[in-house]
Structures are given as C-alpha cells and as structure tokens.
Amino acid sequence: MNPINRRQFLKTAALTFLAFAGRALAAPLAAAEKFFHEPPWRRKKPYWGYAVDITKCIGCGRCADACKTENEIPREPFYFRTWVERYILRRSGEVAVDSPNGGIDGYPPPRDPESIAQSFFVPKLCNHCEHSPCEQVCPVGATFKTEDGVVLVDRKYCIGCRYCIQACPYGCRYFHPTLQVADKCTLCYHRIKNGKRPACVENCPTGARMFGDLSDPEGALTKFRESERTQVLKPHMGTEPKLVYKGLDKEVR
Amino acid sequence: MKDISHLLRVAGIFVLVVAGFLVVRHFMVPKSFGEVGHYRADAVDEIRALKQHYSGDAACPACHKGQSQEKAQGGHRGVRCESCHGALQEHVEQPKSVKPGKPKESEMRSFCGRCHEKSLSKPPKFPQQNLKEHNPGIACDQCHPAHKPQ
Image (cartoon, rainbow over all chains, first blue to last red):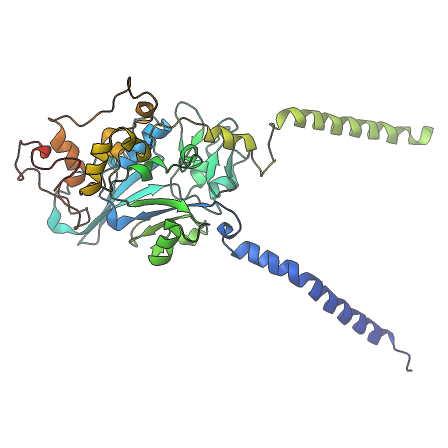
C-alpha cells in the first residue's frame, strides 16, 4: 500500500467532511427554507386575515362610524382606526383623494362629473403585516403580533414615543389623545376571540369588507382569495400585509 | 494572597454590579413578558376582555322574529340590523331599559341617502337615486319599506 502524502490526506479528509456536513445540514436547511417561505397560516390555527372588495364599496362610512363606537375612539376627526378614502381620477390625469371626517359623514357627489374619468372608494385599515415595521421599531415590545397574526398595542406598556406612527407605511396608527399611547386597529380582537366579526365587517351593508381565518381551507376568506385577483398595498415594502384588496387601482397608495 | 487582592476587589465589584442589574431587571420587566414572544402575554387577555358595543345579528331574531323574516326576503337581507339601528349590545343585555334607535321620519331622506344618493363614485350596479329629483319631501319608507325595500 502506498503511503499517502499530506496533500492527499487533507484533500480526502476535507471531501469526506463536506459530504457528511452536507447531508447533516440538508434537513434543517430545508426546514428553515420552508419556515421562511411558507405562509404562517399553514402551521398556525387560527390565523386571521381580511379582504376588501373595492368594487362593492359605496362610501357610506358605516364601518368607520362603527369602529369609533365599538373601540371608544374619540369622535373628533384625525383619530381613525379605519376610514374610507375617495379617489377621483380626472381626465386631465390629475388624481384627487379626499376623506372628510374619514367618510363618517358621507361624501357629497362630485361637483364636476364631466371632468372625471373614474371615481371609487377605498376603505383603509391596519394591514396586519406579517413583517410589520411598527412592531420592529417599537423599543419596548409594546407592539406585537399575536399567535393568530393580529398586530396589537399593549396600552399599559407603550411609552408613547410615537416611533411606530412614523414607521407605518400605511398611516394606520395615531396617538390616542386621552390614553396617551399609540393606537391602531385590533381587528376588534375582543370580538373575534368571542366568535364575532369585527365591527366594521359587521356593519358593512354591501359586504365589501370580509374577515376570516386564513388557515381554514374551506373558509370564505380563503375561497375569496383563491377565486378573485387580489392585490396588497405597497407590495414593494416587503411588509406582507394580510389585508388584500380586490379591484385596486394603480393610483391607490 | 497580597498579590491577588486587587483582582478580588474587581471581582467583588463585578459580582455586585451583576447582582444589582438582576435585581433592577426583576422589578423593571413586567410579569408575563416573554412568555410567548417579545411582549407581555397578559396584554392579549386584557385586549380580549374589552367591552363590546355591537352585538351582531344572531341575537335579534329571538325577540324580533317578524322583522328578521321580513328583512331576509328583501333587498336589505345583507344589511345587518345594527347598521341602521346602532350599537345594541346593551339592548341585548337589558332589553327593557335600553331601547334601540331608528332614523326619524324627518331625517330619513338623508339617512337613506347616505347609501342610496346617486354618485358616480359608487358602483354603477348599486341602487341609487338623485334625491333632489326623486319625489322631494316624501319620506323614503312611504314607498320603500325599510325592512323589505322594493
């Protein structure tokens, strides 16, 4: 038998090590890959989601009104967990967006209908992002995502630094004027955990707002997401919202 | 022994600082923080226990059977009772003392118009009327019963 030299020995040892390491790491790497790419509602149950059908919204504002009642939000403008925006796309290319009192008082019909190419309503609320910027920037852990996918604020623990309000790309947070904490949509967590629907969904007269369990393959929301072509707001932000829109125009931000 | 006394002093200070940190941390970090994630697990239960104002439609037919059946047959079957009558959880709990509201006769045109006033922002298929031209001054429910509109 030929004695092997140092170079051959090191080469063989390195290759053997790599072969074993590759096999040993394959399973955990595949698991990690699955963990990061698979939606969380495949492994967690329930996992709440939300959908808005823009083609059904009539801009009545019952949702924003019900939200304020249900969650005891101050009535004066500027404090909204959910609101309705009206988009007016003019033939000139100009885009106008308004939301007087969040749509609670309704919208008078537009004054100059001849100049308008298209107009529609867009209900807005917290997107309950899978990778939520507001949760990431909170310095004390007062904003968090629950095991069922809802982004909440711990009112006792929030220090009121307002960093999350700056961080939200969707403008869905505000500073609660009396409690002095950051506040946002909870998907009516106190309702959904008791088998009810969020107040905005409950009060939408046209069924434009939908709420449901993403982990239920037979659920109405899953069926809606599978049968309709939907889009999220600002997909380039990588926030992965669990709120999807049907009939979203490119002008909607 | 004399040679390492200065090291022992530093070690003593180090132990004191770590012990102090642990004591302060014990009082600063709230109970249940970190049990589930980087947050106070008790906060979930606190939010869950908040008061409900809207009851939902399931409770209504028990007492208001006629109206519920009527509504189920008409164009307003998809509209929830509380969308027009307001938040009624208290009424469900105390039906005698808390009474639901309903739109006044004089305010009916603007109340119904919130949904049904003609606007090009609304989906064209949705039933809409120009309220200035459509029978001005007459309350809507004279022709369109609210629970079963035609």
